Length: 276
Image 1 (cartoon, helix red, strand yellow):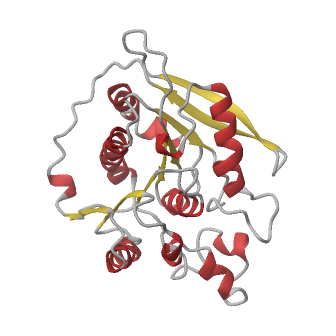
Image 2 (image 1 turned 120 degrees about the vertical axis):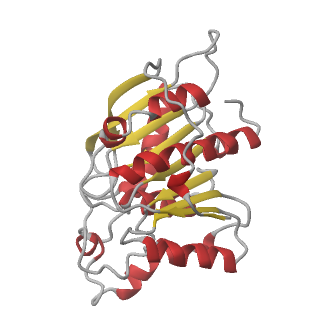
């Protein structure tokens, strides 16, 4: 499904000025990288004393960002999780990790960290639904690529995935954003690049296994690669929601896009029989 006029119809949400969501900054541990990694964990205000298990959305930052970006730059997510009743976890993804297990640098094993170590850490310490039906993942830019990459490769872990302004095809950008530092140069390792770009992983998707939402502004430098991803998903009859509209690669766009993504995940959890 492709929707236009994204920024012209944002009337779905009236954000409250006060919220009861709890915000924890936590220190997690990655055994694969042997280091402590910070994350922000947002827990919704309990309603009527409810302390039941909660779904979780893992929300990834972009290149040059960190674990505090989303909660500081888009604080309305606190109101939204109070409304929807699920948790959000914002991990630190390192500087230019692209959320891969780098084949050239053992200090960057962020696929293992996010998809295994972090989830285990969160599930051990918070009242989470420990099932793929209760987990979603999304992010912006590098984090949009990371969310789709991880979800496609770990469909047993995540039930839904999204991307906002994601770098969903890395091949047109061989000299940018430390990608070559994590994979080696495109000229030297073209096959490696082909295997680490989201747009080439669609054959791994089990039909109807992942609920997918993508969005990208029409003035974004990643707009064309998102259009191509949407076309390839459509050619393969892979259900997904795709939203475009005026917007560039900036927080003005991401602040508006995230409510749509969280609404999508709320509906996914409801359809999966997970009460929110």
